[in-house]
Length: 523
Image (cartoon, rainbow, N blue to C red; front, side, top):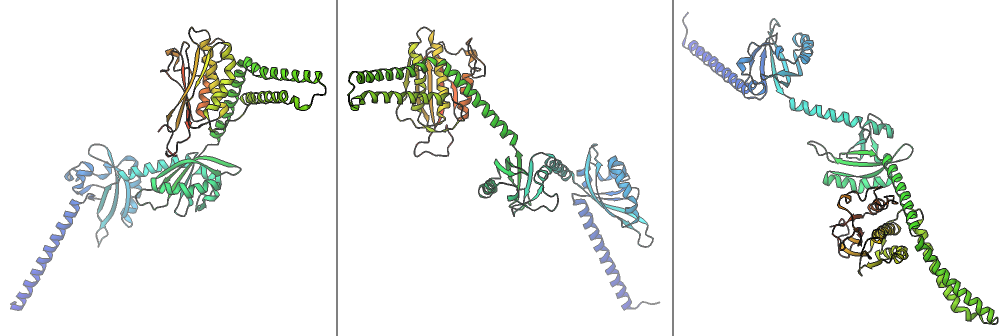
């Protein structure tokens, strides 16, 4: 059969088309080969028994194997034993059903360690017979994600099991999730939670949260402080930490509120304060006992004056019965003055020894120093030791409880008197004060006694430490605690003016005009 020119042309065109199609297919094949070799995921092809038929270059980076090393190796041999059973259980579904599955498992690298893989697989079958040809897999390293998920799971377990009340708040300021402790304490539902804050927090704390805490957390990321929550039967004091969610993808306005019940701590603190007040009261009673002669002198002096003026007035009345009442004005005025003086001294002593709670407020330091010195004055005179006050004018008012501060000064004065009584040349005890900085005043009590031995300086404020046979060792310990409760301090000054003991009473002072009222003391 002879081909015409038209037939030859058609044949050449068909050959050209097939050649172009083959070239395109080859180009597409090279393109897909390049994609398979360039991707960071491991592209692999397997026989039905899991044998590697092909592995991409990513095997080198992910597992440490050259691709050729994996050819002919069964992937099942490299599975972690704990994960292989799961795959084998899925095999019938993979091989005989849709042939598509995804699994996360551990795969052994060449160095012997295991890599967390997430593999997406699909079977390829003969179109006419349905016979399995091979299995195509795309695997990626998800170790970082697995570890992150495990960390989140552990944290979630900790949050769920902690006794703190953990609340998660959405942008609408409603609690959408809470841990078990919070659900149990506040009777919250476990699912579909949308609880308003006013159900959980007292009104004052709710105002603080909305006006101060949330704006601060939005700006700085966190806030901590004390709040009051609504318990089933009573208010629950809590130490709260409020955090803003600022992780990637987190919507604004989400907060976590971690609330620790501090009821027990508050009760313990109140009990400790009561114990401290009781001990301080006992210490004042003991000090009053030591000051018995001074108290007797303070009372006896005005009583003697009253007796003298009364006797004089009675004598005048007996001698001159018709004496007008105006003539008795002077002795009666003197009697009234002494009665007022006696009443004032008795009120001061009663205030000093009575049981009471501390009330820190701004007071004048001079008044407290004078009152303390008056209590000890008679004993100092009996011991022939001079008690000198050297307080400069213009000192700012200080923050203290006047009776507690007076107790501290009296304790130090009595200790100084005891140290000076039998020590040669110790004839003075001096109180002097100075303004340490804009928010602090220091009152110093110094004596000329033997001083504090170096080995005792670190334990002198310990309870029950004493060098006196009759001492209880509580005066300095109580004084130290009292100063701390007032926001001040009591310290031993190793560089005193005299050779004896020198103690510094450090007190908070009112801010001077023009200074920053919010600056901390000591700045």
